[in-house]
Length: 60
Image 1 (cartoon, rainbow, N blue to C red):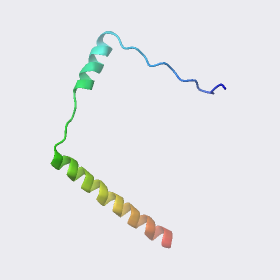
Image 2 (cartoon, one colour):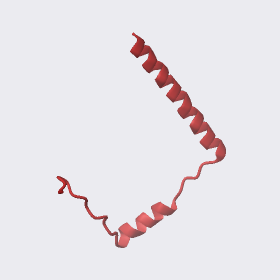
Image 3 (spheres, helix red, strand yellow):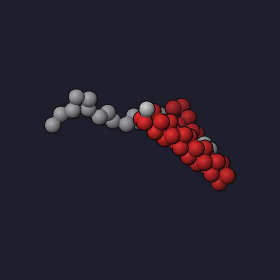
Image 4 (tube, rainbow, N blue to C red):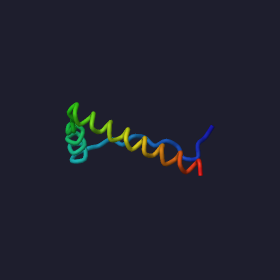
């Protein structure tokens, strides 16, 4: 079985590209438990609003 767009191999990085990639992989934005909780609450609120809006449009 052949695919229309075959998978490409993952490129191997050398030199400056490799160094930049390693630095970016080490740079992690850790969030505190409070920040995670606030993000989860904001997401839940937006989700509930979207559900409410969809229910209103479906009923009309």
